[in-house]
Length: 306
Image (tube, rainbow, N blue to C red; front, side, top):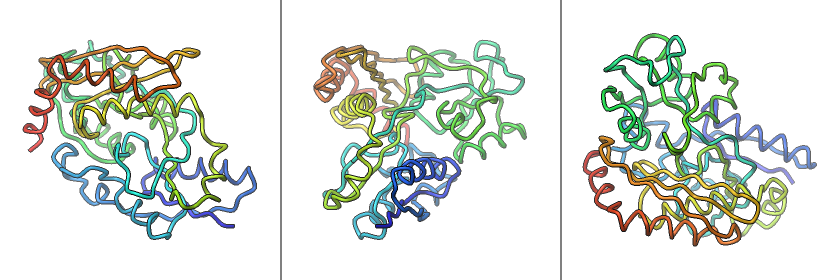
């Protein structure tokens, strides 16, 4: 049986698809990759938060899965909406790369060393809000594009620094460009950041069985907790919502954040619970944030994005 993987055509998406392909080939399967252009790829000039579309980078890929044009899809987990189309499911979540965000700057200047008014490129309200909470004097520039495109924009002087996911830079061989890493107490990562999602048709038992060995249970549980928090808040991946869960033996710890776009209010919660029940932990974290005014801040963010 030949398995067809659906992927976006960006360097990072193809790295991820090739990574999965190599591991499945090592298990004796035959694979090919089919590149699918998504709405997100076609809207390079639009700010993510203003796009108004959930699953901007996966809609067309999921349609190909449902139509049987491909057998599995490899996504960045942070791009995957919490509600999947009927008939599709996440069959495996491989071990996560470091999920934290990083600063990439000219002359390797750290955040505290950047001058007042420094131009920071990011398309994420989550990053913007937490950056401004750290330094309200920064000038945030909306910046879309693939990792290599953004690095070129930095190099030609379009901005003074970028905030990116460290995982993407490491996977593409740009680790040497990283100036510094942010802790989750400084900039909490996006839900699912650093993790991959292998999505399949629930009717395709053969493919589900083929990808099962790629699943990393601890990562999968952590991501389930983060996504449960996001789902309970009713937010999408374009809003200033952040979550990071990690397992410590039988216990899981979850940090959750909701912020105002201007960074003047940052709600933060920490919750712990049994690793075997990640959805409960995510719901409890969301409830704590809602009690402190999360819905008000998310309404502000939605208005800000329009």
